[in-house]
Picture: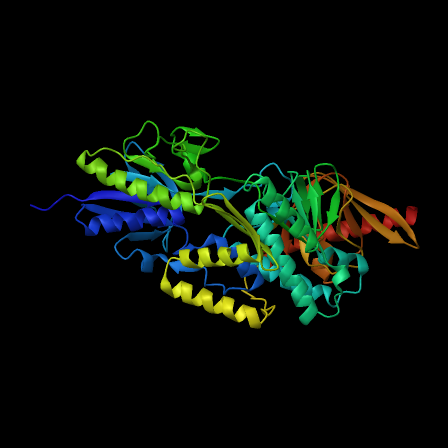
Length: 543
């Protein structure tokens, strides 16, 4: 009679989820009757500490990722979104794959390792205009954007627009924010020196916005935090400390005190929040994270464990909760796997006792900060060598260590090329946010988009004979910009926001495709455009 396999479903393919599955596979080879399934959006594990180097080109785009199927040969892997979890029925429902139908996976034990997601709620304009930095796709997108900006700025003659394009703003002074601004700073300055020689170093501006008095003040000792702050400033990064980002437009970052920083590049590494699936479980949460005991079992359930960024795991010394770092998630994963196996046999549960091995952070210019075991604190070049050595050793496979090692060796003698990857993916319908006084477009601009107002108000202004005349005021539900699209002519007026305004944007290609399929819709737009043109002509005559 065969042994009944204990079905374990792991949600999430980050450090925590992957190492749980690795540990369970090892237990399975030793005779523990487990059947492991893992659910993740991508079919690879991202080595997060090196993502900033992808932006700068110090490592290759795929050098920081490892295929899940190579890491977990005995695990059943689902590359799907999690649609829902029924903890009473013990099932996980996944989103559609090729066909629009759900997949339901039954489980005996559930491990939640879903991490966090970027959360821009409550900050107008950030979902539309801020670049997040959390995934490999984010890193590639940021790199492409930076190179695109440099390409355009190198030939731009409008001084104001050129300043906007050559200003790079990063919000958040934690490890992600400091590493991103440091890498972008090094990459852009190097690229302008070698390739974009029409851009002078004095034109470049790099700004880090941070709510604290120093960068990395929560992560490091005061001495190392102060060193990191001085180092970034010495490398040409402008530090706006004690400040917070509150809103964004396509051409500006807006701070809480009303300061506007004109920029075409805004990267926000804060805030993040636990994956929404975590809250939908209906299990105890605090600050959005699942409440666990020392064994990483979720309060109130015998069959659900949680770890990593989405779990509130008590530290063994009782001093708060485990920080959301990879080293803690990996140790938590081993505890979870051990306890799931112990649950099958009725053996005692193991408690999480790891307190940390130190902290590392890169600051650009081959400098870093390091807090090591034994109270050893280092900064500068030696800390940078240790930073690279430690993370190189922690790469999850020999192939990746070889690739990254060769990339770093080449980077010492061959500077990275500013090559932009055109993925050929259009944005389609999108949203945009404008603050009061912002221009949506100017008279004479090319007509490339149709706009529909979701909230707020705008005014249409025509400049004739050196004087401005207001032609119309528009509110929610009204649209504008159709005349230039229909006639393929320049914009006949300027549209600017009267109040903070959110709009829906339809690009010209999609607009033309829609009109080509619906002749009646074209006639409707043409009638509105003709009527508006006649009304505007009358107002101009009266004026």
